[in-house]
Length: 129
Image (cartoon, rainbow, N blue to C red; front, side, top):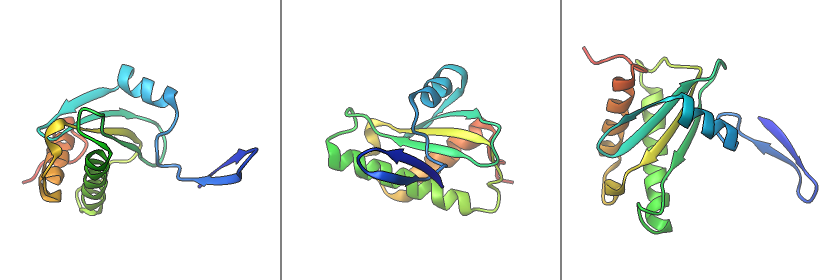
């Protein structure tokens, strides 16, 4: 956990695996690589840390707040399931997952396949044998 001191709220505990700073996002967008799939776009970059940092984004093009939040929840759950998989050994990366407009009315399995395919294209996880 990372502690952040705020004058009004006191001490806040933050997860260290979540990307928050604009400088982190800018460096991933400018110096990182990207892979597009049907339902998600993946931006990634090595971060030289012993853990991965991630962010899940859905712009207003995806839909209203309920739709955007559902898209983020689907991506988070898909990443969590994928991370528990045996062939996921990638550490030391920064990931930004961006939902595409057509993520509405999808099942979690569809989004998981799209995220898995994007990570395979990027060479982050091994290809199925």
